[in-house]
Image 1 (cartoon, helix red, strand yellow):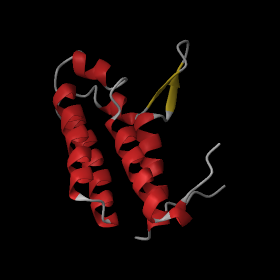
Image 2 (tube, helix red, strand yellow; image 1 turned 180 degrees about the vertical axis):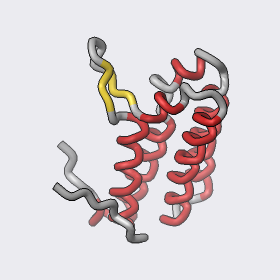
Image 3 (cartoon, rainbow, N blue to C red; image 1 turned 90 degrees about the vertical axis):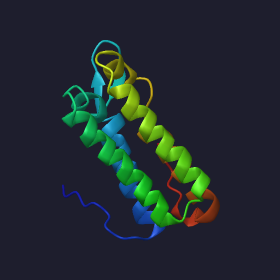
Length: 129
């Protein structure tokens, strides 16, 4: 089975790419026993400083993709605030690592992008099961 990351700049490719990144960062594994989805954001965030910088950069990439789609500045500001809040809370030892399980900035930002695409580019909608 081959896996191909959509590389285009069209709204459908951006939707697919950001959706895959969100899944990887927020819901790529399930914690046994509690059945809670966890992603690389929570795992990489356990590495002091470097982990937080890396996950912030990936969150900023999602905002950059939204900017390229033409989202209004107020939506970009909201998305940026989500990333900054996640970064700030993540910098606090132990508390920040726990917060990664609750405050999922990438999932929040993906919802903002999806709502925009559903309204302005309805042909990009995907039936998700």
